[in-house]
Length: 508
Ligand code: XMP
Image (tube, rainbow, N blue to C red):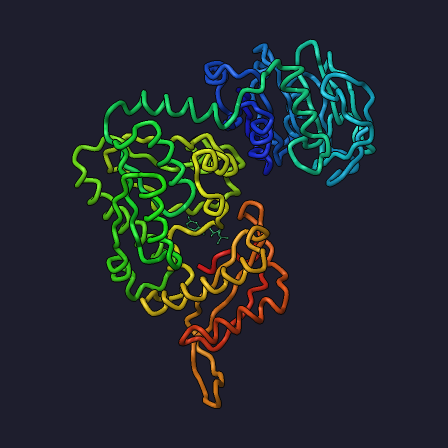
């Protein structure tokens, strides 16, 4: 496997992901992961990520130069390259002309990292410093207009560096550079596939769990379903799933999913309709954070109660995926500080279960590929993200049965229209929000004084930033007409034209 040391680049996850796409397993660790631990992991190659700092500034993220003496090929990217040069006796200095964005790569030494890379191919740069003097033993094999050390290599020692970012799509032949590093220069084989992953995970789960019982909470989302299916393959009916209806799900979501879990996947599912309990506990609560906390707590209470009924259960399966692991890593890499995380429903430490987390190493798109392999419906796999606290954070202010009804109906109409327009896959999320204000209107010659619904359509790659979607006015008008005509209590519809930042995707 390839170990990626994280120096805080916003692209660190992309590096790991691109490497896996090339068929090699890779893992991210914080930059200060000790040499002893690195040796224990026995990686076949190491990548030093980019990062926001300068190697010569006080408090820069530094590592021991011994990492270059482990006899393991190393690729430094951007800050990683500068750090390698700095630690091995080269010189790094501020660049007279900073370079952000596209640049054209001049290949001056063929072979090595640049084997098969076209001359003047486009690369993506984002740096203020550059390597001025190379360390002994290194050569320059690629340059750009503003950087005469865009690609440097010490083939003898298997140490390589690129100033550009091969992991982003704007670097046209970035994958070629990474594949040269992996296969030609580090001797990897392509052996990481979803099928091989399933096989090895099933064995791993069997080894861990034996013939004991496992319990898994389903949320209605992809991760928990895929976790259950994988664990089910490993332990069969010793897996018991619990699906709690919190009354905050989309229209039809609970009953449709329950039916398919039982019939299509033959999972052992305990369905618990706890809508009333959740609603009661949310009475008179208006603060978004309080709502989230209450929903998390009630979920745990119910889950615990149901799990107890199953008798002795030793294991809990959770759909934790790789971004969750990185974000909650106690030895944080610097890149984690720019991520927000939201997962409610995380189970408390007091629960005496041993964890089974088969998706811990996977990125979202890999989880989707795995789900497909395990027979999950493509429509289910590509569903938009839905927040754990569900419609409770889309009914602004106090949550009541009546308000949930309105939000649920508006959401269903909106999604129906979006599907009709074949827009669903172009959007990251599409949903309706109910506001706690009334406005005056006129319907059938009569004055009305009713509530307001907001429509939110956004595009995004990862939910961290998002753009509002410039929807066609005829589509908006159809949605607005249907919502006002079909839902009692609504006389006005607004369209949210705020991006993230400065807004967030959800309203609460
Ligand atoms: P925001 O609103 O912060 O949301 O821009 C970013 C992404 O996270 C989802 N989200 C949540 N997911 N529990 C979740 O599981 C939550 O409490 C939560 N809040 C927001 C949101 O739908 C968007 O995709």
